[in-house]
Figure (cartoon, rainbow, N blue to C red):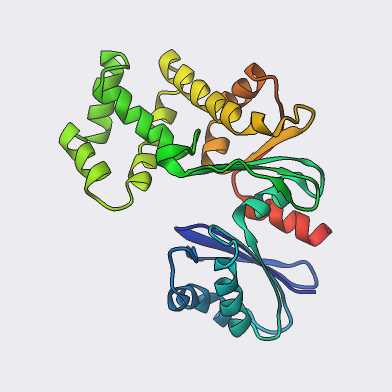
Length: 276
């Protein structure tokens, strides 16, 4: 059996092709989000993949925004592009659960530009605390860490030395930040782009405390609502991978058990699909 597996976000889509002898090829294309994109835009994003791989395939597409009825749009495009394939379209959250839990019961979380979580029973998602987006929720995400970071800098909640380091390293003035957040498109991506500053200063006590506090807030406001302290809590995404030490400490303080941390969910998806 030949597999074509996709992990798609709003900015990029990672594709992995595995032939019947287990050989693996990868390709990266434009992001696909059917809540945002038209059928024509989705076809454009899939076109380079169609040129590369055809024939008898099982296509598994996990993507942001891939919930009914939007998932039907993606499925229709894939069925036209790969008419001989068996096509499956699921949400990125179910993809994270497959990648992290590998068919076992657990709690799966996404910590990237946005955040999300679910209770997974080994077959499907049985409970999901709505993430609510970066304005109302998305605790622990890159966008919210960036929002809290600039708020602390502009309101002088960090030490003078740290506030000065932020201004010098980013080159951003107060006016620049206000413009990018309130007047320019995609402010969540701008805010998430500031998170590397935290990484460069993570050894400073106030930054370490800041990171652990926000990760604990994610755990309390999302994971704790599943009321399953017996289950491991696993994570995918750049924030989880980059700040794994702080995440482990947040879990310890909340009395929770860490499962796995994966930077790229596609690797866990391949592992799950080829073994199940």
